Image (cartoon, helix red, strand yellow):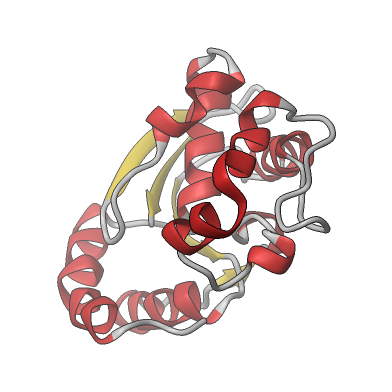
Amino acid sequence: MGLSRVGQAMIPALCEQLAALGPDRIIHSGLRRTRVLAERLGMRLGIVPAIAPDWRERDFGAWEGRTWQSIYRATGNAMDGMIDNPLGFRPGTNGETTQELLERIERALRDLPEHGLIAIISHGGPIAVARQLLTGGSISGLATKIIAPATFITIEAYPNAGRCRAALPS
């Protein structure tokens, strides 16, 4: 999926906000929605963005591209399986389990450089999981860690006993 007109309109302000933080590196998921902001930010700062597929959005299988409302209308509360059965439930029958998403984001956090400020341009699911992993808590609280589109948070992480800060726009 690409960016909506609303999403495209948000890029300039978000780019300026992120540029003001002065990131040393830019990482994005490789999906078009993140690549647009990463490339614009990279041009603004003279940094070549790096693609890190571990930061891509969750694979929702056959639910991909559908709204939550349409999924609910078609399946009732089936999407609760993402929280109720994190090891076995695959959204859209063939999507990524919550456990697989958690393991992927654990790996992505471990792979961060040890020092510097990194702009990680990602998606709601991976950002929520990163926040959950860094702050603790149960999988049932994962939904409370989702941030609104076109916003960002900064986190301090210690992936390899070093120190790095990351700005994670959604």
